[in-house]
Image (cartoon, rainbow, N blue to C red; front, side, top):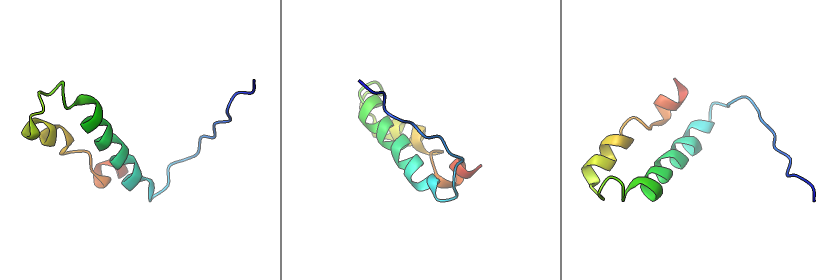
Length: 56
């Protein structure tokens, strides 16, 4: 069986939108229950998961 090939590259300017979407979706899907499904707590945790923060 062959191993999948993984390529690593330098980040690009437009990676922020997809990257933040993945992080935010991960929080919603994996951590909501841990946060008691508290919408305010979830939004607070995700408040800095922005394209601007990604670029920083």
